[in-house]
Image (tube, rainbow, N blue to C red; front, side, top):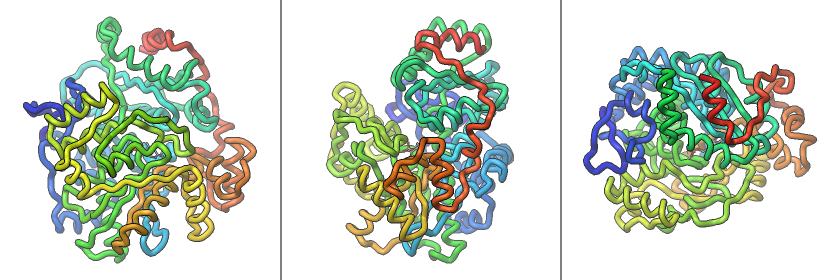
Length: 492
Ligand SMILES: *Cc1c(COP(=O)(O)O)cnc(C)c1O
């Protein structure tokens, strides 16, 4: 299987190891596979009897053809072990007759980014060997919270890789800060930046484009790499859990083979829902993909009008991982629907004017599969409370946006199909907002909210979030943005 850039009409081909190492294509586009491998009825029935790591290795081997099945199985077993995912890697929880919650947050940081970031570093480590790279990869991450912690947990103690995370000192929650400050591992480093997320992000981007820094790093046998969600190595592990969910529904006798189900995904960067799209293109019987947004509803508008317009107010919400105005992975869908030439043109317009409008044929192709809904803060809180009190299902704020949108879809289209809702974070990850949504009273504090929510709902705090305040702080340095390169040099 070869890959090429979404903006390259020549379709210059790359192997998967090279694509995982490079992350972004040199023309600024994203890598996509040249064709979509198919899952036959036999394949799906076989996968149904497998463990999660075997399911993962089977699906990954169809895309990552320069890795052996044994390599992929070894990595999948290590990534999705019982120790890392004590509740199972992607359990499917039946909420009611029509809604199934696909819980992707039983991993080491209690958010769905673990599903990709537990395995992707292992794939990158192998990619360095496969591409003959003799240098160590230094991963730089600017984070507003969740990605940083998930990347640290994924890359810690991985051969040939070091990771450094920068976060805004006052721009993350107390829980997130504690999670990062207490990080362990012999190849990790964490700094707080005096500034906001943009300052951290700009600082990292500056280092990536600094030629002098690249030379100096290379002299010391380092190359820079990113853990960004546009890397194909992060996307392909996300296809697996949609296949897995369908198999679990078959195994439970809730569907017959061939019966189509809908999927609703709380969306930010459009990575997770795009993985569902690939699963559908592979032949998994999925019908509609419902794109759920919060008050930052740029995708809802795009899916209804065909115009993507980022020139709008940015809202800070209680589902912060979806507070995004540029959904990078949408470019991959555009390429599938419109081809490389138009995609390159749309992206140029987006860069220049912050907006573009797709043509009628492209919109029609997208409409065959995708439909968008959004939920504001009040609706999110009300849905969270309703599912807890009426169905006994405790959802986090992001999942609640999706539950709300799933119900909007079912009311509007009433197609009688079952709906898989991607549940992307543990309720304990956003305990204060979850507690407030259910009780209409504020928790005592961010950290006390965990115990308060546990007492209120008689459920256990997700294991990565227990006893956070008692753990040893390993990283407490705060620096100015202009010191970032210095600490990178110091770290190497
Ligand atoms: C990252 C994230 C999302 C958004 O996923 P995308 O793949 O960027 O669309 C949704 N919910 C949570 C909790 C996340 O961490």
